[in-house]
Image (cartoon, rainbow, N blue to C red; front, side, top):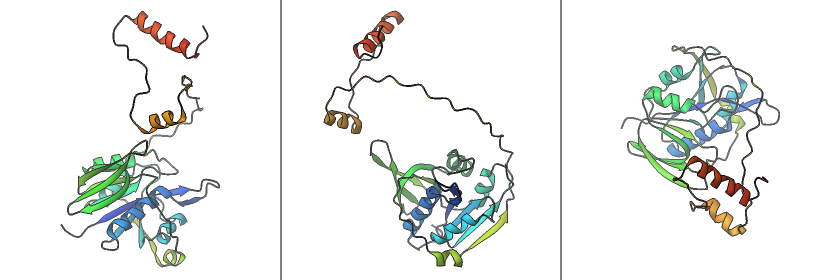
Length: 255
């Protein structure tokens, strides 16, 4: 294989208390994972789509990036096309699962993988290179994990629980630089945002637990059934009567 090329996509985050612009922890996880994979054996290009004059981009220099390549795309435009053109030819593209501020819905890794015609590995906790493929450990609910392999090139979306020990070095922040370039591919205008009042979600009825703490813990960490019955036969009236009987038995209704 030719020389390995790795790109890390970074965005501008927001401080959870003050809201001030800073580095995004999710994207910093992607940068740390890339550094751990190559251990200095390959160059890592850090890419940002947005304002190159944003001071928060220099935080990534302090976290180990040699430089940050900022694509100066017009505000309010889709940046997927510009990013796909910029990372063409790279073997691995890493980014956080979602952004911390702005129009960050978590769709960027999926749209980018689709534009690159490359496989996407979401919720990645660790990654290891093997010849022309990459093996990742993915996060699953209830503490489970699984290994998934994919051929290169590939897009990796790093899970927020991936191991991370930030090392902010001021000297590296001063030594690095942010390079600006104008996007050649300009996407369509994004749909205007619409503000709507929040609607409280419906409250789910839950039967009172009568099991021991050990039994509840086992049920939460395993795939065993919690009981109940699946009614597949009978009329709609008979099924409704069974549901009402269950609600009355567990004191969820009083009629």
